[in-house]
Length: 256
Image 1 (spheres, one colour):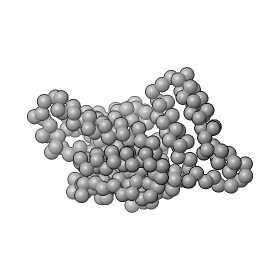
Image 2 (image 1 turned 135 degrees about the vertical axis):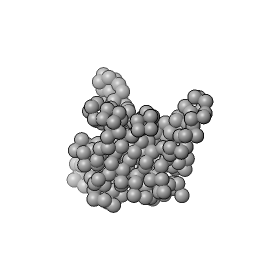
Image 3 (image 1 turned 90 degrees about the vertical axis):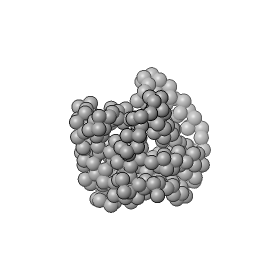
Image 4 (image 1 turned 180 degrees about the vertical axis):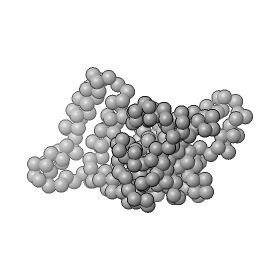
């Protein structure tokens, strides 16, 4: 099975399969992510975990499929790439946070998927690789945008132009990886993050996710307006009433 979607109550888990190709991209993986983003509109869903069935998170595009693209007209090749980009757009527009649980490594568009997530948990020794240049190709899936936001320009250049792998340990030092685990432990920690999201205020979390994403693309003045509008709405919402009351009463809030 190339991919499957597990409904775990307050969270969805996308399991990337295709293990004989180290979790290379597949139409089934795209479909599972898109379906998860649709189901996430249900209030019971608080997060989505993206992980793999096998020992490698995702090796990116299948070069055998890319070879078939060489004979296509330019507009058809662009349409295939837009299929990937539509998935990335859906992840970024999703109302709940994505958590990546990375074992082994994330390469090419697999790295794009990991960086499109809001939280990254990675096992020690996992490699983050943008090796497009080795095949005479260039990054896609929003990879250059994500790297520019996360890393110094010189390291992004080293990764993209020289295909230099970066270990999870260094990514953790650079605060790109949130949590570093022993091999085999990434999924357990990802579930802990999902537990924390499940206990929090869904609407406030969704608003914060949207605000932080927007902050990279607007001026400070525009972001101040966004914060004003979001805070004005949040102050009058039921979640704030419960959260403030719980704080004053020295109890845990109930956001269910």
